[in-house]
Length: 100
Image (cartoon, rainbow, N blue to C red; front, side, top):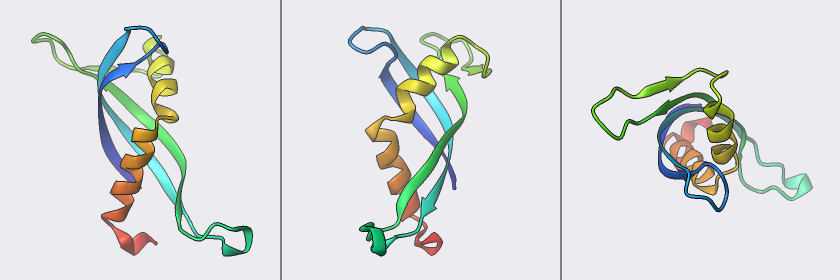
């Protein structure tokens, strides 16, 4: 499944005031419940960030980062394990229960 996730005040370096705002395109899968191993509900798996766009703090256009841009891995790493991103994936998946 795919959707766009918007972020702001993303802390790029833990415990330091280096912040970013923008949007990412996210792909994810919904894994089936596996009651035999104790997983009783479908769950979000394989979250992948496919693009990152940074907002401007002036009238400049948004900056679409290439994967080799030095900021890309910082933003990717800050978001990929973020509980808010996982929650957004769960919310997105719940809007289309037909995939369960």
